[in-house]
Length: 105
Image (cartoon, rainbow, N blue to C red; front, side, top):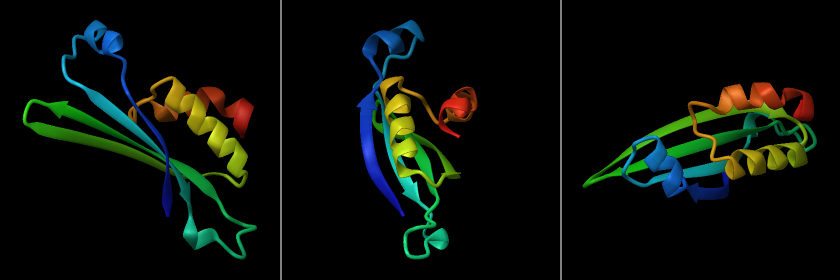
């Protein structure tokens, strides 16, 4: 099961700098791995990021899901906050988490 954590549109300045001229929305989700829940004490948490590009009359969607990151829900929420504040996309999330590993895991 996943619950919506937050969403952002990538800043226009960042898009123009990358020569992208259409809006891009990022959505961040906290994932609770139901197959691991036993009385909610053994819940394992993960994250999911969805990127949606609004190109003229169509949309292009890309997503990345990382299922088993931590047993600590607070750590996952702090991680999601960092990802959201820094507009991390699905393609870059694994590298960012690898860099932050010592802080969270």
